[in-house]
Length: 212
Length: 207
Image (cartoon, rainbow over all chains, first blue to last red; front, side):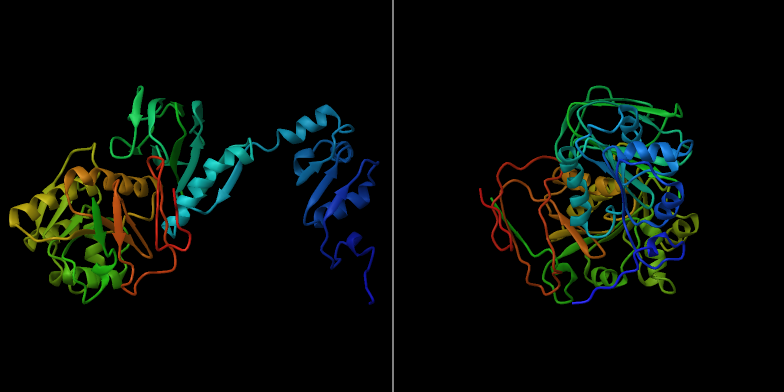
């Protein structure tokens, strides 16, 4: 069987081939780099390749973030690893809150599973609604982006919460139980302090509106 | 105790179940609407549900007058409220802010069913499963409250979804109306269920 390839097509600004880029731990040629980076579908670094990426993009590293960095991490510099690590703060999901009711519930269920999948917070957004599952403990939500709509709520989906305490809401809770059939906080709103704190003893779903 | 219900019977033109209709503030599917309206023993709107009724019956609103409209009236459009008021529909203002318009409407519905001595098998709610997430959850919560409000089963329908809260015990659901779509599910919303057993599903549960 005959194969065909234009090996240097990837270095052509107007090249046709679709490619992924993998950066190893060697000095990076700037010319190659910028052309390849701009056209790559996925961009990865193998261990110390991240050091090379960090240095060749000095001054604007945040415009050149790899899709992932893998390796045994014995070459990546600690400050480089830290830099790229802190660049992912949250996973944002678009969709999942409308349409088939069983699918909406499945989205909520995935947030419960997510705690075993990733340490990152996972939020789900669709149209004017956002949901975010709060684990047991204390939480501070900054709600002063200017994009907050006029409603919010706390939904004990999946389990009752014996003791919930909040600040920053119009209708706050103090060691109160949230439970379907007893009390579910919907159509709540903010007290204009810009911060909402929530303390809960069990997983509790935060929901809020987005101005659209 | 065992209960039995054909949840989609209310959507069959020749269905057997007697039901009351409660309309919430969500876009109304015309197909659902006409079938449900024609067979309902009582018809109510919860606040902005009246706007939805007004719009889906455009041009012939006076042939589709609800028995009552209840709520805190912060969603109903003034001209819609005026229209139904002039036509003689009962407007019941319910100011309690701890309960949703849906829950309060359900309370009134049960009282009217009792007062009129109506023979009713199920309460059908239109809307409540789309839009604001907190409202969807509030609809589910109302199903929990409903057990203290009415002995009747309460189902909620919007577009292609239906929900119905099963109390502890055994339940038989007749799913052979021909209107059943291709998916169904069991959602432990509000609390884990330690022991669930089913038959009739592709993937049954068995303790």
